[in-house]
Image (cartoon, rainbow, N blue to C red):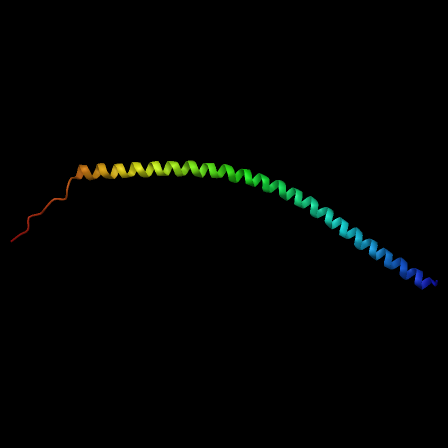
Length: 90
């Protein structure tokens, strides 16, 4: 084997080793990122559950308020009485 052939084989082996280690490093980073992202998603899910509870309570309060407004409208209509009939001029 000549010196050029040995140099070529060593160069190819080092390139393949660099590509393999780069790929391994990338996989390692992606695993860490996906783990962190999973934890963040779990925290957001908890916040969404609490927010759903708050929205349900607000919805109940608004429906109660709507019922009260209907009662107030009825009371105002009773106080005002029926519309007055004006006498038409002949």
